[in-house]
Image (tube, rainbow, N blue to C red; front, side, top):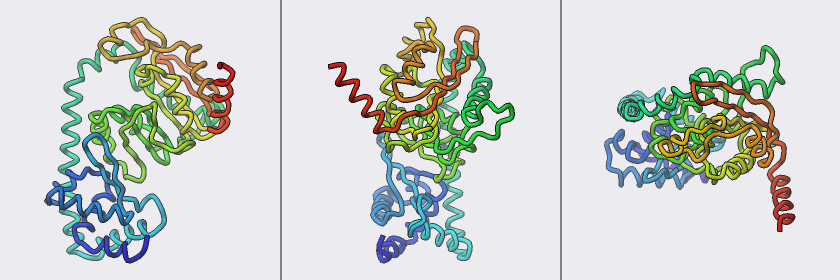
Length: 342
């Protein structure tokens, strides 16, 4: 970035305030307009200038556009600009006062998000409680999942250290519970979901995490918006049964998993509750161990360990595996199979 472009982009009080807010959390254009008490067209103009200068980046989610600061992602001039503004807030009392007022209004935005989340949970609490009553408690499932993830690194050491998940991808994050649970064990968490409403709930739950540690994205598990071999750990928590073609979802997960990276799938064992298909939109009524082994191996994962937790009517299964093939080798193998089938 040319230095004169950087200085020009910073030469406005509103843009300085905007950058200080985005250093705290990802925000929508409308939310910034509310916090800064300016019109959306005016905020959009400032956003354009900062985006062209490489100081912020935009991400579309449905009809919303979210913004985040880029400074924490590198050690270049954008990062130095962020450090400069932090120092300015410490030394310039007037600037600090304005930033504090902005953060107070931002706190109101956060409270509104939490209220929206609470209302959503209240509307759906009965149906979720009914489904939970059929299987083992969430706490037991989470504890067993954590144990298995740790065992992948410690080879069943009876006293394993805290699990290190590296870069974690939570596919179908829903309300963000798994991202929240494992954020302390991850270098960075990318959480993706197809539903904008679910992402708003997840955003409320995860808003205490700094932008450098979290990415929330709208997307489909059949077309993940990430580069190949981007993640150390990939998690499907109660989401694969929504896939019409789970083999395609796992192939896409394999594409973005580093060689040697891990996968964990939490889902139901095969069952006969047809009402979950009609009432909860489940495309698959669980999976057998044989089916899951075939799916994992077909995608390029070596199955490692699994576990079962029985409930009143449904059994929760946890399957884990290791990525065994590079993207290029997996693609070559897939091409060979396609040619052989012709």
